[in-house]
Length: 213
Ligand SMILES: Nc1ncnc2c1ncn2[C@@H]1O[C@H](COP(=O)(O)OP(=O)(O)OP(=O)(O)O)[C@@H](O)[C@H]1O
Ligand SMILES: Nc1nc2c(ncn2[C@@H]2O[C@H](COP(=O)(O)O)[C@@H](O)[C@H]2O)c(=O)[nH]1
Image 1 (cartoon, protein in one colour):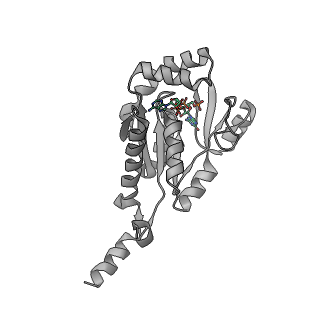
Image 2 (cartoon, protein in one colour):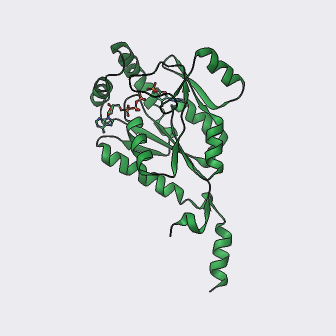
Image 3 (cartoon, helix red, strand yellow):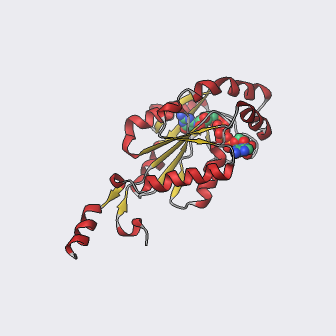
């Protein structure tokens, strides 16, 4: 029997950031496949879809005008301009998932994490993913082969700026070996689920335990 069956738990928000290409999407997919208690926050973006990206699974692809309307209506929990495109986290699905006690995974940049920290500090777990080297990072962006040479160069140019925010995060994962990095990410999630402040009904449970002693 797990903790969850004996006491309730507030859902947590697990945010992953990294320089582009370090492996957030890869690690996120593995986590979602292996853990049914966590769901992905699907962002809206004004970026064009990459080959193979699916509307509603990878992103909601919207025009700049629609993005502005959504932002003005307060539909985003956070939003930011990243690499000349706008990205935002739709508020309603996140609030719905958390209210059901589910955990939510975010693949967002440091600007978004700072905004989430302001509104949901207690529920937020911040993980920064580093590449093992600059050469590996560039190789990964090229091997992914979904962006033009200009886009890859622009993302490499912004990598140092993104990495400079690593101190704002709770955990650091160096994604050298993907299986090991995934194991580390899953361990973080499991441990954070057991934090006392997330457990609801704990004092009643302990009282019942003590009453039977
Ligand atoms: N540990 C690893 N070793 C080698 N290749 C990896 C590793 N992790 C991820 N990759 C590869 O690197 C490429 C970039 O990974 P991914 O798309 O997950 O990065 P990302 O951080 O989500 O990038 P972005 O911020 O641009 O969305 C992919 O082709 C992926 O298969
Ligand atoms: N602040 C936010 N950042 C986001 C969001 N969705 C994605 N991102 C970040 O943008 C870059 C580029 O992503 P890509 O898919 O175009 O490669 C990357 O760092 C993502 O983490 C969001 O909703 N808010």
